[in-house]
Length: 100
Image 1 (cartoon, rainbow, N blue to C red):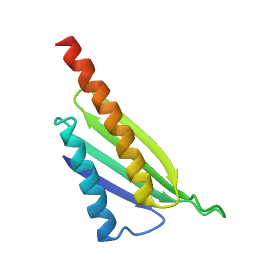
Image 2 (cartoon, rainbow, N blue to C red):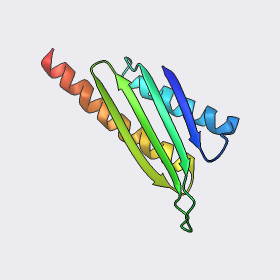
Image 3 (tube, helix red, strand yellow):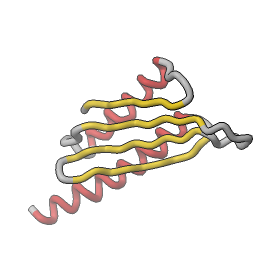
Image 4 (tube, one colour):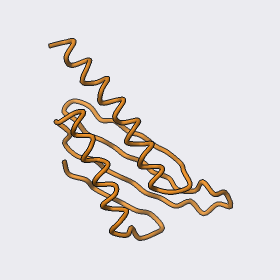
């Protein structure tokens, strides 16, 4: 799967890129026909501690899944996004099996 990473208002370090790649690679266990993933990371300049926006757009044949989360850290946001995407991919896979 191809992963496109875009960050707004900051530079992404190598550890975060590797973390995101590892988490997204685990999604292929649930659904092996993922085409690509677009990951958008953004820091909002607010006084609140939860100012890290994480968005993941996942493309599979015939559909796209979009998840948005706001957290204290990007790692938490990626974890929550990936768990949400896992649920959506399992539902999609069950639906495809039912129609087959």
